Length: 153
Image 1 (cartoon, one colour):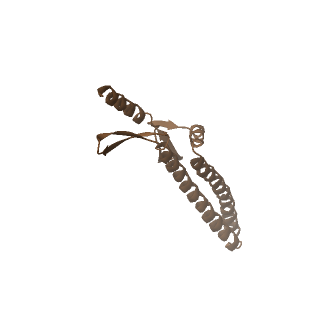
Image 2 (cartoon, one colour):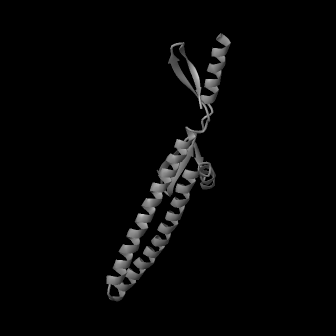
Image 3 (cartoon, helix red, strand yellow):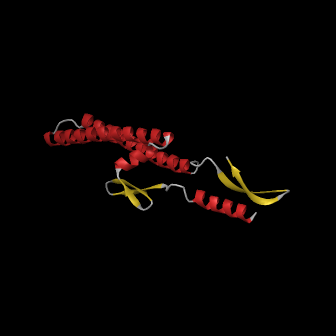
């Protein structure tokens, strides 16, 4: 009986130590920085990690597309701001460049916000999927026969 209890305890300790590390994200000067187990991840590493979970990968890819849209509208915003300054120097009408600059800036900000939201969702989905990796768990249980551990599939 003692050997059986020792075997279950050993198995429980082994399975609890097999969990992968969660990903954390911190804002940085040039964008977000991603860490796993106190190690900074590159974009290639985070892309590879996100492919481990289908739901996380879906949100991650959506985030990348929205960031690209934000960059494109940011470039259009830069161009329309140059147009606005050019018209300001030439004493030409400012209505069209002002509306264009405001519109492209607002749309770009919306795209970047949505991208950030999807990145967060992808990381949370990945971290949630880590808890469900093992197909079984040891669960403490009690019944009329006593207290013990049960394998839950």
